[in-house]
Image (cartoon, rainbow, N blue to C red; front, side, top):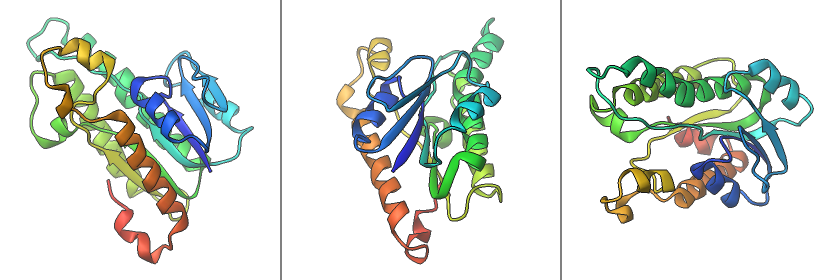
Amino acid sequence: MKALIFGGSGSLGRSMVKVFKGWKLTNVDFNKNQECDDNIIIKNSNDIHFLKSELNTLDKFNCIICVAGGWTGGSIKDENVLQVYEDMNQKNVLPAFVCSHLATTQLSRQGLLIFTGAYSVFNAPTPSMIGYALAKTAVHTLAIQTAVSTHLPEDSAVITLLPETIDTPANRQAMPKEDFTKWANPDQIAGLVRSWAEEWSICSFKSKKWFNCT
C-alpha cells in the first residue's frame, strides 16, 4: 500500500507518517521527513510540473492525503487583510488544488483523496479570521467539485476532514490558556484516515457506497 502525504513534515503530517507505518510513504513538503521512503522537496506549493515529473518515476498511490495548511486570524477591517488572504490561499488552497490535480493521474483505482478542511468555517461564519475562512471554504468547495468529477480513477472517493482545533505545538503556543484536552488529537485523526484507506481498498463496491463522503 502506498500513500502520498502533502505536508508530511508538519504536525498533522508527522502523525500521518507515524500512523501509516508499514505503508510506502512519499512526503511532499518544504522539508524532509526521514521516516518516509521518498521525499520530494518543493520550493512552492504550486509547482505542478516539477511534482509530476518527480512522481512519474513512482507507482500510483492508494491514498493521497493533503494536510498542508496554516492559520491566521484577522478581520476584514485590518489593513493587512489582503496579505493575510494571500498567505492563507498559498498555505491552504494551493496544496489542496495541486493534490486534486495529481489525483487525476497519480491516484490508483479504488483510491482515496483526503482534504483537510475546518469545522469552524464549515459550521458558521467566522469573521474574526476572514482570510482563513475564505481559504478553507475554497478547500471545501474544491472537495465537492472533485468528488463529482469524472476525471478521478474508477471507484475512488474524496473525503474532507473537518477537525476543530488540532492539538499541535503551534496551536498550544497561540492559545496557551485553552483546554488542550478538548482539542483533536492528530494521531487519532491519522488513525481514522488509515482505517478508511484500508477498508476502502479491500471492501466490495456495493458494500462501500456509504463510505463515499465529503
